[in-house]
Amino acid sequence: MKAPTWLRNPETRLASTYIRVREAARRPLDRSQSRGEEGQGLAEYALIAVLIAIVVILVLATIGGKVKNLFSNVSNGLNA
Image (cartoon, rainbow, N blue to C red):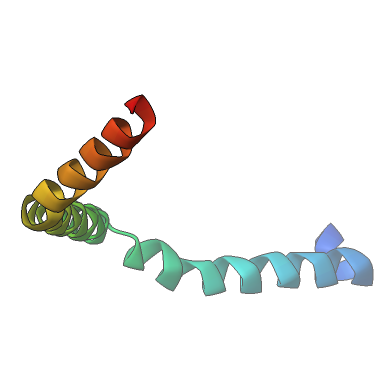
């Protein structure tokens, strides 16, 4: 019985071993990137965006009148 090519050639055997080890190392990473976790990440980004929008709206509502008066004063000063 003749040995397989990968067993007869040490370089091919090394490459084959490398590929098997690489694939074994990838399996846990592939499992961790399931649909549930991708959806969870998307939901977290959406919540962050909503919170930022709420903060911006609150800040503008709080200081919006002051900013409007400031720009009006600057505009009136330029027109005078």
